[in-house]
Amino acid sequence: MKIVLSLALAIAAACHTSAFSLSMNLPEVSSRRGFIGSSAAAVVAAATLQAPQAANAAPTIYKLDNGIKYAITKDTDKKNYPQQGDIVAIEYTGYLTSGQIFDGTHSEGKSNALLFKLGSTAVIAGINEMVAEMKVGQKVQAIIPPELNFGDKGVCLEDGECLVKPGSTLVYDIFLKKSSIPPP
Image (cartoon, rainbow, N blue to C red; front, side, top):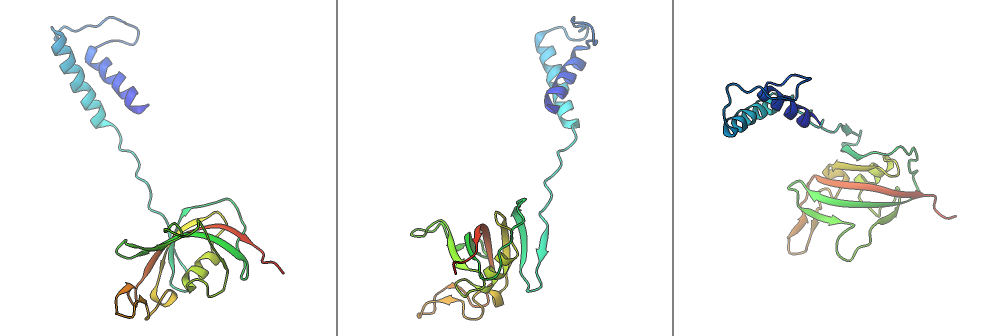
C-alpha cells in the first residue's frame, strides 16, 4: 500500500497535477520519452525516501538454572504443562554446533513422534528437563550443555569414530505434541 501511494504521489509530482485537475501541465517535458524519464526519476526518488521497514526482533533467550539456554520458536495459548511421570510425545531434531543434523524423529525408519515417560532415562537429561518446562503445543530451540546430553562419553563407535564427540554442546528443536497421564 505504501509503495502504491508513493508511486501515485511521485507520478502526480512529475506531472505537476493538482488535486482536482485531470489535465497535465508539462511545459518542460515535450515528449513522451521526457515524461517517462521524469516520472521514473520521481518514482525512484519516492521509493528511496520511504521509511525502512522494521526489522524482526531477535527472539528472547531464556536460561534455566541447569545451564540450558532456549528460545521459544512457536508459542501457544495453552496452559497445560507436563508433570513428572506423564507420557509425552515430542518431535525433535538434534544438531551439532556446526549445524549438522545427527538425529531426529523425521529420520528414515522413525515415526513422527517420540513417546517417553517424563523423568525417565529414555532420553538425555537435557531433553527431559527442557520438556518439563514446555507447554503442550510449544516449540523451542534449546542449547544443551555436555553435562546434560552425552557428556564425556559422546556417541562413539568402537573404532573411535564419533557421531557426537565427547564434551559436545548440542542444539535441539523440540516440539511438545502431547502430554497424558500414564495408565494405572
